[in-house]
Amino acid sequence: MKKKIIVLALCMTLLSGCGGKIPKLANGDEAVVTLKDGEMIGAGDLYTQMKDQYALDILINMVDKSILEKAYSDRLEDAKNYVDSYMSQLEGAYGDQLEEAISYYTSYKTVDAFKDSVYIDYLRQIAVEDYCKKQITDKEIEKYYEKEIVGDIKVSHILITANVTDDMTDEEKKTAETEAKEKINAIISELKKTKKENIADKFVELAKEHSKDDSTKDNGGSLGFINKDTLSSSYDELVKAAYKLKDGEYTTSVITTELGYHVVLRNETKEKASLEDVKDSIIEDLAAKYLEENPVAQVKGLQAIRDEYEMEIQDTDIKAKYAELIQSQITYYTTDQSKQESQN
Image (cartoon, rainbow, N blue to C red; front, side):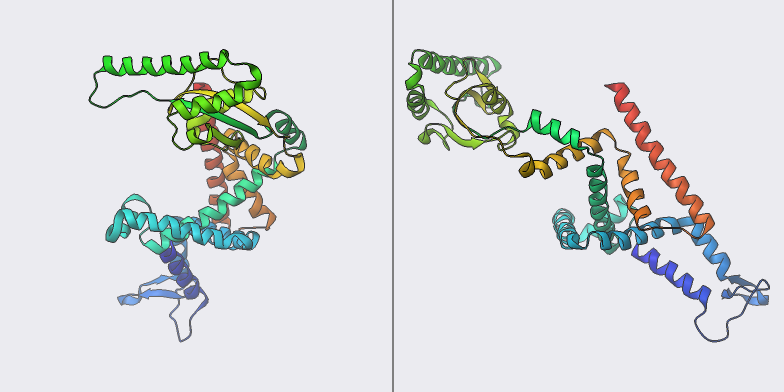
């Protein structure tokens, strides 16, 4: 893309003249190329051809880069760091073949041109996210706070895993899984026999004796204070179960995750954070959901910031192409969304 920008800039320089006596066509255009018998190719013809082929892409990249670097001057270092990290990953994967891979898999011919596109796209995504945040209402924020924001809870668990190996037959694996479930159920039975006031101590004892989670067993199975998104997705079912308990209660049925089989104890609950403290994170969550449900925001978000900076394309041909581009993008996202909704 950088190469195309240079070419277009050269074209504009030729249009404005660069010193010396330049031959002109009958219509007054300065010549870019002269041939024998007085034949010439004029700057106007060259510009028209270039404009038809790729001027819009170049122009939009130039406009967006100019606008977004002003709007997000405090995020430019983040953008550059992201590009460096991303390019390092590609260099690790492709080595000396990186430029060849970029040329093959993308429309860019050089590493620098591709890097510039990644940089601009990073800033564009920030603009889209900000647009989505502006669509979130106070009512939505309050509703999310009431339903989704919860206080931290202190949780402990006992994990039992099946002694399964790759060389086992399906029947042997099934037997191992059954034995693991029986063991976790036996632990639950032990807890049921324990007086309520002694549950916490008994849980610690059973965790130290039986749990297969080496990182927590010596601490009585304690996972510390957690919230809905504290642990990895491997613990999703465990966390869901824990939030259904009251302080001092444990799960009386087996909780199954990809890690194995669990019994979970909820020890303590903290008061949830104030709306003021979590408002920004709520808006981020709701904005991400808004974008997922309204992918056309990818287009409208960039339109909005271009309008904010009063972008006005003066060339009527390019202006018409820009309108066609925006409409095609809107059609793409709305059609794609309709397909997904019909499939659901």
